[in-house]
Length: 153
Ligand code: DQA
Image 1 (spheres, rainbow, N blue to C red):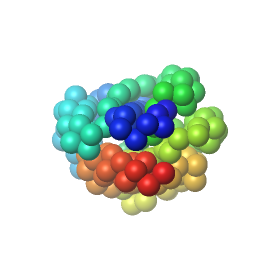
Image 2: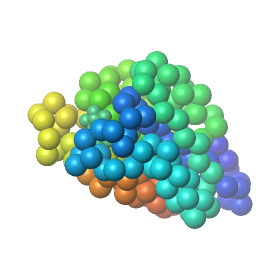
Image 3: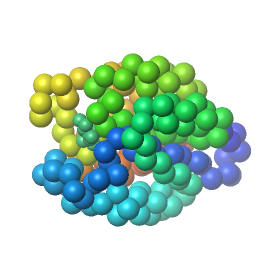
């Protein structure tokens, strides 16, 4: 984490399970972009906001948790799409709660207008904001939100 206001802010994006198959998943929920294309958009937007971004995708809960632990010392903020873990992973919730930096939860689809089990997010309360239902724009809005949030901090 940096205290120097001149230094570029470092953010990190974590995509959860099955998001590696974007472009092949239900396009009406998740949009048409592949993960590579989405990541290019994320990089371009972060760059335009003057921030450095690292991007990860993990299918396993353990790798997400290990990465959250590691980022506590090196990142200024995190954007996470915990994917299906959103709905039941108290372990990821606890890992987010332990972080001294802001975390924004994002979803491509509108999880509140789908199956009942998707309406529950166990991670939402420990994040500074939840953004959903805007397909790739959910991530881009999260970048801009984090930029404003960190500027005010
Ligand atoms: C998702 C919504 C989750 O319910 C689902 O399991 C995903 C993706 C989204 O981005 O809309 O894998 O997080």
